[in-house]
Length: 308
Image (cartoon, rainbow, N blue to C red; front, side):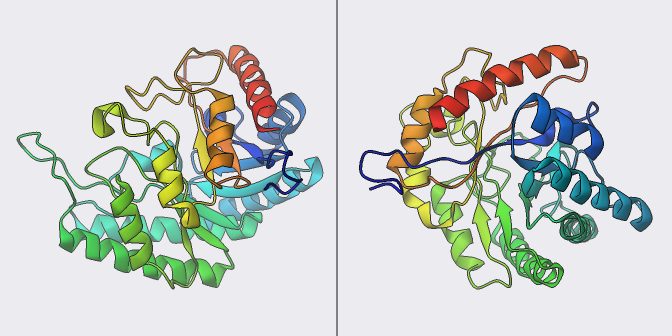
């Protein structure tokens, strides 16, 4: 039974992650016009590739106010803010050096402050990565000491997020054995270990992560097991076009193995809908901006039709 009756599909809110704006439409005055006027989105997910939380307070405050002002002026709701690619390249909360972990924790606290000032109620992303082994082999799980430290930091971060007035924090599972969580069982354990935190931690799975066949195998059921077994803690989803061989983050003008109609069906069948879905795509810096906009228009039209 859907919200509109037995024969009416559950609507799927559809927005766009601002990762495509990096080094291009970098101010709120620019990206809000692209998002609303060119692509027709009313829902967006901010990327910290556009703002570094470690900028001086005066600079951050001015940019936060601009985000709030420009999104309100153009009728855009910013659902959440994700850490972006730049910060993701660091090992963050699982770096071998505890002092670097402390810095990563402080970075997130600053990110929460900016989000609150900008009127963005949720912040999230991948949490970190342990170092690789000298022989290149991959462990099945991170060390229990590292895991315990990560959980303790997550509880502290939730307290800081609550103090800023945020409503949710996100973990984005990734298909890397050096990160956490990368399996459904790990995600379930983590959600249990942070249950009752000052602000709830939730999951934002990515279609190109859970479908990564080199890690999960070709017959793992794609995204459906994630959705069925973690339904209660998934409140947002990333979608991308990919080939299941790497985490591509292509747009839907590129041939791949992700069918938007199938995406919508799986979200509805598993009860994840009506959680919002965000198109998350990245482009080489040398890619011309005009063709990016054309490709995003095509992709957005395909997904909107499937999600309607």
